[in-house]
Image (tube, rainbow, N blue to C red):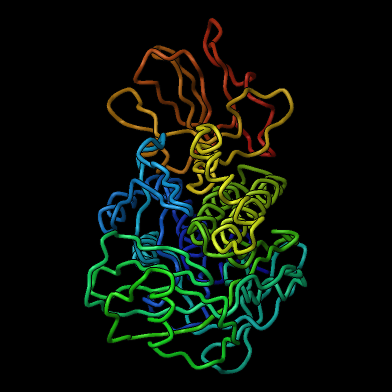
Length: 483
């Protein structure tokens, strides 16, 4: 294990793996990104939605503005029964849903990872894994050749639903297939849809249409009455028929450049960590595409894990800090499975009692703003909070919005340094190499310690005379020295 004491191997070069590898490299951790496929940013990705919390995390990496400019913004989210949710009131700089193909996000993340110094190993397939007391050895096969070994202090599996890393550590992936025979296609349209995002259900059919921006549109469809295996041949006539059933017309679909049939699962690994091996993104959880939360949840997994792994490897925290990754992100993954599955079941409701339940829920959300805000907070990611120790301040564990700081800066610009931020009332000071200090732009008297991923670690409503002292903080933050 010589030479691997502070190194990480990330397996999988999708959005989750790219963001995580970039974060580690930016923090000075030597990291290799291993990918089974040849080097190529594929335009065949399924994800098309970037939510507010993900844009905030990208903002903390200096990428959000360029990504936000490439997509098409929606300030309203249309659900079933005519329920429309206004996103313009979101308490976020990104008070909208961004329609943007996943590959555009991957391009920006890959460029950042390269600039940060990530080493890439393409056409490298993981075939086995051995854990030791001080590191992990991967068995890999490069370009279909003979087996080789790669070693690191930690390995992160971000290699998708069929994760070789998850299988190598013996973790099950319990769950089930929820929808079979979902069809995808990239097509041209003779008629331009009225809305940027076109989606509807009718009877047994569901259809979704979103633009690539290059003249092609991604179509996703499902017909409950035509439940066939993934291997069943697919043609454009079937896709057009689903669109007509769900949307009333097929918009003159033609010139399909790609078509595929797949099934949608709901699964979650029971643990996200086994010793020195961790899981993130689809390797840890998969769910239905309802709500567009898949890529977003994986990116937020990476944002949670990256700073913790870097702190451990850079000697600023004990290994116990890694336990908080599963403790914080596993409940979020479970909640996303539950909400996305619920949306699919309600959208495709057919029996009288399920239709009545859907109508009742729609009316309730339309009338009761706190319930509607909670639903929006979960879909967009801004409403999730992490567990806090008993007796903690009410803000601990909550997402901190992009507050204005003294001098004209803002929080998520300051978080680009990848360090804890202590925000103090104007005039107060605090000196420590462990945290960076900023001041509120307003006259607010709260003292707030913000984690590198934008969540509150500690807070006090009033700063005592003499200012914040190191003894005010918890003795440690799960092993992270704050003094």
